[in-house]
Image (cartoon, rainbow, N blue to C red; front, side):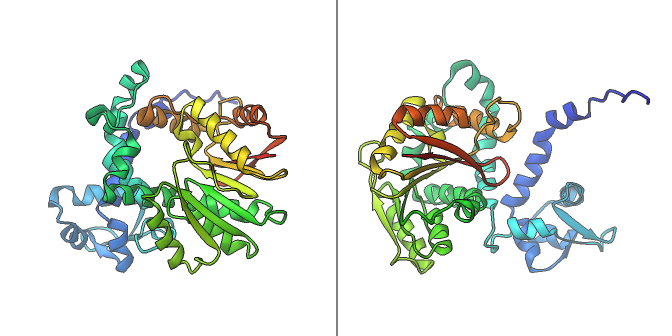
Length: 342
């Protein structure tokens, strides 16, 4: 058998990856997929809707076709562009599965901050808003309601699939109450309550977030089964519950604060209770979960000393805090639920 010829294809695709990323992020920011959800359009029609200069129309839309984000019926100027099934499901703003919010955030924030990855690696310091204003990220977010709502919408879209999988796969039969710490809009509590009629939930977050959660929970028709609570989880004891969840929370903090949150969860649980951290857990040998490793680099850029972690790390910290047993439940893609039982 002839030896496979060496090729730099993967190297070049990765090196030029920002080209494809920026095309998709721009399309989402322009709301291309929401516009095409109304009806297929020719390039000229779509270009007029977006107020684009004629020079870039064909290259832009045909690149989206070649990348698999759009489909095109026909060739030439009369050809019509339409969404793929995935684009219609995940990138149309009106779809219940919309995840475009996190991509808008990537375009407006992370794309430029990642340009300073070399500086982050050399200094260990954040490269986001903090670099310019000296205010911590969350202080910046919570002082600006539109930005906070954008951030929460982005995180909701990113977490929907994983939270849904958790609500479906975790065994809730032994439990009656759940507290979601850092619950934001109440999304995880809503999904658990819908799936398990016997569960009563509490969505716990900073007081500024509580009205947003109340509104979302009321819209879901679950106000009688889902309560909200406000407080700072570093200074306020966590509400007591049989199950305590933290969805994409632990990775925001350094090791000392991670351990504080784990101890706080242990204190709020009854014997036999479960603490669940839903994260892009890095595989124990740190060889396979590319997204988890890149997310950890993103935590460096966002916070400096924050980082993502492995299931083995989680087990060590939870055993230290007094938990008896740990397991990892895979959810979707690179995400898993790390579970510790008291």
